[in-house]
Length: 339
Image 1 (cartoon, rainbow, N blue to C red):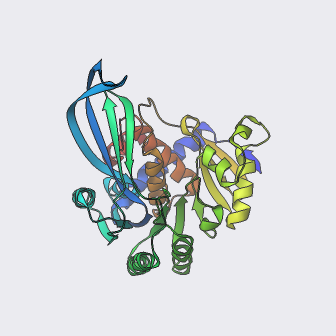
Image 2: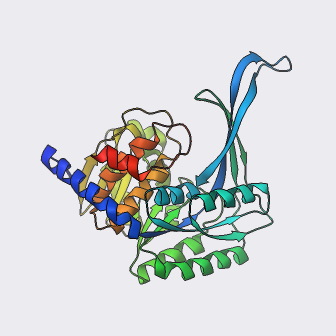
């Protein structure tokens, strides 16, 4: 696979095309299907150690709830000015009520299936200043039942005709069975809609066969291919080697490997293009992958090539990692960053 680099002029031209595409976002609708959850942030001050055990005592000053997992992908899409249809499963509990309120506030069109046998996924993060002390997860990772699977697929089939592009967001909480994922890909391709996948490292790569583009990070790439993470130090195991193996299994000809502070590697038409990160400062990478796939989807659906869509996504991710917690990228902030 040939590795290519861009000149300063080519990069500037890509930035200009990316900036020009932002006005098209308002006319786009993205369909997101996958695991959703509630992100809770319990913030406070630590000034002493508990007399009961050697642990810090947090004096809570603020508790905040935000959209998490695929719901964060959806709110990135709406905060960038586009429309979003979100399909997922929730429980019948207080977290579900909070989640629905937040989704409504983010102007996301929801198509949620209620499963009373499982809790709504919630992640509670206890934070002192900008430091996470502990995270508490409420979840069941078992796959959904056949009945819930059929309900989700029915909602997907109804929403698909009015959408421009599809995102499968896998957080391995059980919403995306093999059958459901493959049917989503099959129907999307039959409708001429691109399918993007943000994979989970513990999901078999076969689940995503037929998808147009997947966006794993480096460690996820090793896990998806059952390669030891120790091989990350092996210089012969390049991103191109990983990409070739995954593309062969998926039956696709393009993908993106995100590399955190090192940017992204884009693989297309047997070429390897690297684009550096645009983050000026990094406080918290939580949700950065959600922002990346949302921005890539909007770029592609607005007529940008994959490389320019990834450059756009790099700028969007650079904005959100400068903030603490799951924060979506705002369209005005992205305009300012690109200009």
